[in-house]
Amino acid sequence: MEPVRQHHDAFQVAGLAARTTNREENDPATARIGALWRRFFGEQTYASTPNRTSDLHIFGVYSAYESDAHGAFDITVGVAVSGGAGGVAVEAGDYLVFNGQGEMPQMVIATWQRIWQYFEAHPEIARRYQSDFEAYEGPDKVAIHIGVS
Image 1 (cartoon, helix red, strand yellow):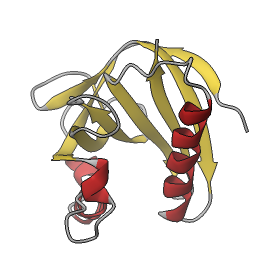
Image 2 (cartoon, rainbow, N blue to C red):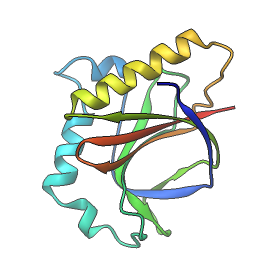
Image 3 (spheres, rainbow, N blue to C red):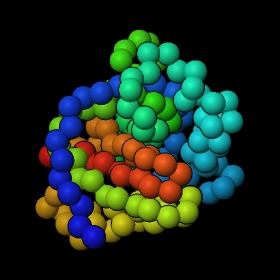
Image 4 (spheres, one colour):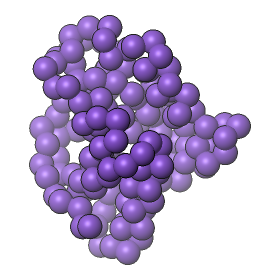
């Protein structure tokens, strides 16, 4: 299934954050993202985040890219907020949206594999590496938004 191009206004997400790389995430001994999600739900961060908006999505925001898919990046797991300190800005701009549905975490992993394959097959489409985000509509449905020029 081909991604859909959408324009998004800027918004802010607050929650829990970590810095990692794709290489580290491929090794269970150094992976951080799964533990971050477990902590987010275990501590019910979604329920206690101040300035939460009416947007009910849970977000995973990728930002502060060192370079590209091979460099370090920040991952913030959180909810949309109307302001305040400690959040991460999702940049306004065009995004390619890749949808996934199924059992976690395999569904998200498979969707990211489709994303990497898509960009390998379409080198004419440039990723921005400013902010990308996962928007979860439930425990088995995600829309992954990849910033493009």
